Length: 255
Image 1 (cartoon, rainbow, N blue to C red):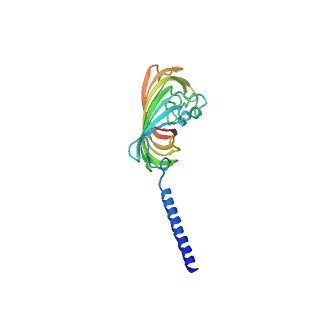
Image 2: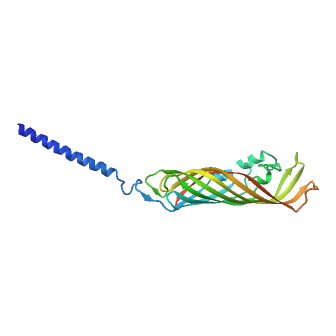
Image 3: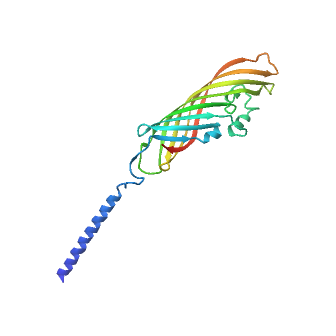
């Protein structure tokens, strides 16, 4: 009887050791990434293509960008935008029209009508960003992946209007018609967060502040009623410096 009990005890002990060993082996295997799942360490592709639909409403601009990865935490983002005349009732046009007739009629200050963004007949701009990510972006382990970043943004914008008529003086003592060309240069410090929803969709939310300078060349075409201090064909130049705000939401896909 004693020998039979001992044999049963030894059999149960050996079975438990075998089962526990198998469980440990399974758990160890489960801790390793499986081939074909999103948790595997995979090299990202070389960049992203994104558009910024928010700029359609903020600045009447169609903007698209390409981002190129270099190091795991470093990339270059280049954005090109086409600026078209703002439609009546858009946000930025309404903002500036609230300060006067046909845009702002002030002759000095930040809201000077020559600085009005809405009254441009056309233009384009280029923005380039040197980005440093807080987490590596060249590789991913799982989705969704996201990382904040810091960037230094450089901007150039060219815009113009032809034969713009605006009422000047206080209160609206005369009407002036002129044409303008403007070159704008600026830089900004940017903070943002980029997120990869899956192997395709990318979102990029950013915002920052900096400094810009504008060189404006204008030609006065006519003044009504005629004023002794102005005449048709008169030209002039102005240089204006101001704060530069940059923010938006880019949406796109990996290349």
